Image (cartoon, rainbow, N blue to C red; front, side, top):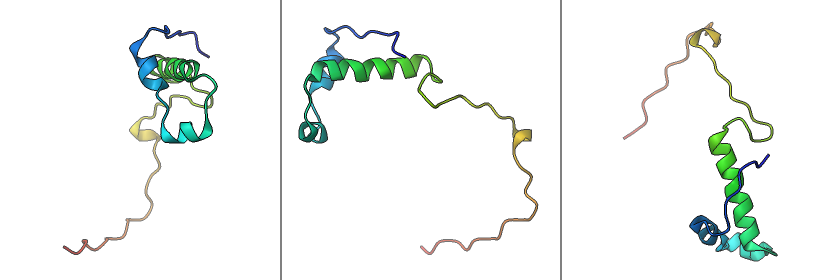
Length: 80
């Protein structure tokens, strides 16, 4: 998926390579490579919104929605 390459000297790589607590617990063999991979994936998804595996962009019109057959019940106001 990643046609995009984030250069190693990109300041975001160094910032993202600082592991979060959960990542420290799990460990990382190469935090810089992990950071680059995360940023490349993020760039790909930003530039091509439908590119993530299992995702697609769905466009609907208001007439594509369902018709409500029965009125919805009135809900009481929340107490203040």
